[in-house]
Length: 228
Ligand code: SF4
Image: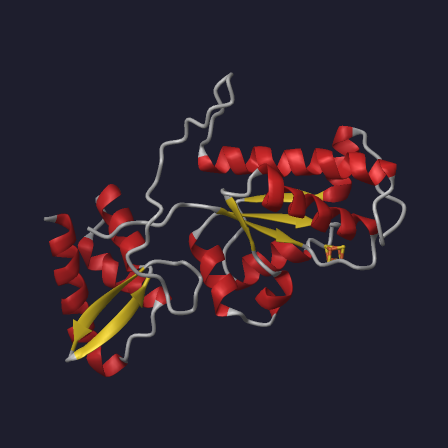
């Protein structure tokens, strides 16, 4: 049976250099990544997203994401939605500051006292969203009670995104099929029609038109093994 990777949340901060709120977005995101939820989060680079980086897009297609934007142009949220998938959660900093009655930093180069307070509050908000997404609960003594998912990955996509793959032998060649373990798991958990599985596989993998029959047979055989 394929082993799924540990689920993490991807944080996508806007790269705004023009506004102090852009700096605030990056600083708060960094606090979550490095301190508050370092084992539960990864960062996804917005410029790489826009440049068409497969690794960033593949991750965001399969794992939950939080977009953190410095203004209502929502560059991070819109880019994620356009190139990959709708973010699971979205934070727009002016709205967040207004809701919390906090002041924005005055400088875009470094955080002043108001900026530090806002960055701490924003980092806590991002962490709370991460916990919600992962279904995590902290007991009163602080112990993490989240059900432990496997850390191991049987095979990861060669693009380095961490998206699991299965390799099948098709027409005499070893072929890497992205996300097949996740699709198998979803199909079995939701008892979905097996006839639709191949269509889902084609969304994430380029299947040569001339070899569709061989690919379909190999994939459905592998699914039968998985569910037996
Ligand atoms: S969301 Fe606003 S601050 Fe962030 S990159 Fe876009 S325009 Fe700049």
